[in-house]
Amino acid sequence: MELEKLRQSTFLQIKGIAWKDLKSEVTPILDILRLTEKRDVLAKDLSAGMMRKLNLGIALVGGSKILFLDEPTTGMDVEVKRSVWDALLEMRRDRTIILTTHQMEEADTLGDRIAIMAGGEIQCYGSPMFLKNRFGIGYQLHIVKDESLKLKTISSLVVKHIPEAKVTDETEEEVSFHLTPDTDSEFGSLFEELEEKKAKFGVTVTTMEDVFLKIAEISGKKYGHVDQEMEKEETEDVYGNLSTYRLNESLFRPYLFSFSALMTKRFHYFKRHWSILLAQLVLPFLLTCFCLFIVRSDIATFATEFNPLELDIHAEYGNTDGFYYGDKPATTALTEAYKSVLESNGVSVVNVTDPLQHVLDYGKKNIAKYLKNLLVGGTIDQDGNGNLNLTAWFNGEPYHTAPMSLLLMHTALLQKVTNSGEIALTNAPLPERNRVTFKAPAKPRIAAAVLVPLTFAFLTASFALLPIHERATKAKLLQLMCGVPGVLYWTTMFLWDYLVHCVVCILLIIPYAVLVHYAFFGIHSEAMGTALLLMLLYGVSSIPFSYLFSLLFRKGNTGFFAVIGTCIIVGSICIVMV
Image (cartoon, rainbow, N blue to C red; front, side, top):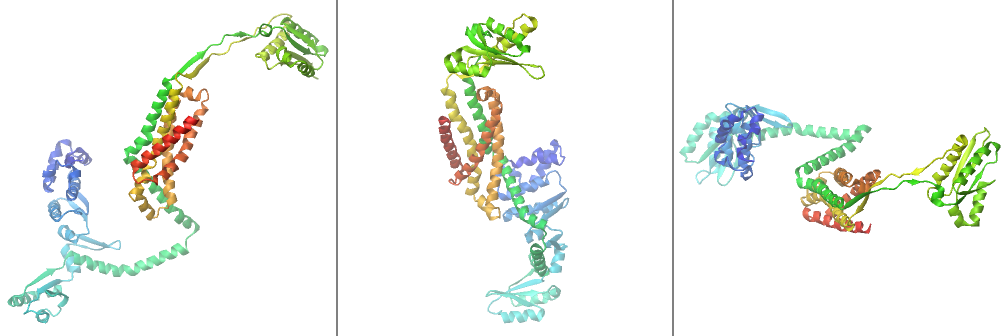
């Protein structure tokens, strides 16, 4: 920011000044404040006094008619202060200036009207002369002592002319008398006699400092006992009359205020430190994208086509064995049709009375033959309502026996109804697409082992920067001394950092979903939620870990890289082991 910022449009446009009037508005102010020779100097290179002048100039620009100035000459040396006073005295002719100050000399010099406050109330208001007359202590007469003018001689001389005079101070060199304002008519004769005796003397009038001290003394007497009564009443109210609601409010409200203040502090710290934003958001995202680009470039996808397969039991397995069961008259026609279908497909079929026992006995005789030959069977029953129940039996060991057994049963039903006809069954699997393999399996593994830990290492290490900074600068100690509980301090720190961690995790899962979704999650999209949950749970452990590490270092850079190194080493070992 340059001093010439007074010419820039920001402040002038706020006050409605056109661009063409910039120079004419700024130059007179620079002249009044005696800043013309500094107009091209950077603000950071100005002294404290010049900076205060710059602030005053910003307030004046645009023809401000009302100025509110708070301690305008604080930090200025005497010469600069006088120049500012001269400028304000010159400008007060066409402006209203409201000024606060604790310097009585400044108030006396600049103020047309002065108001003095005490106890939160205005105690007096008026011109400097009025206040001095109203609250002044009169005059102070200072006389230098010598061999001919001793204290006794001086006192008798002064009292002779002004009987009300009182000695207020005495040193080896001089003596001071207090003279009331109503005795000023006698000053002439007193001063003439002092001059005749060749005495050295001086008179000072009441200053605003004297007025201020006088008013402070009066207000102290006025409010002293009132403060004690108020304190007593407040104490009784706190310890004697609090309801349950007010008690709860008094317990929890301070913590809410502290929590709000600490969260606001974290927000402003995050907003003002772009390096933190870089470490927490930008770098992890870029590293993740870089890692996934490496993985993506090494992925080879291909599709597998399968030839259609006609499901014919004789063509697939040759001559096999089977059975059927149906002992009701109503089932005779269907069982005969089923038997005929089996025999036409090369199945040696037998009629059994107990299908389950037949299967068990067949297996006991020769288990190898059972697994290879006894493939299909069927039972046909009739329930009490006359409905037929058909059951297709199949051996689950060979491939495709289940659909083949159903095919034979449905063919029997067809032939019973039509006395002829065949059903052909073909298995045509869908092509298996997007099968993933890696051209060089070691390449993505190495990339993941290095870059994934590095990604989260930057994020974890960034959480240690603020604790180290606040501990090194004593800001943490100051907060604890001001009443912030340690548990609340760390809890607020964790909540903010975990919120940032959650945002970063959501950003990091996006490249996985966009770039290498199938390679990492396949057809199981819900696995993406599981991966996000793992990232979020990682923050629960990594953030306290960074806080613990922060206690070991006093420099942010050292702690930052120490946490990164630890995370990379431990993370790489874990990835390789997995």
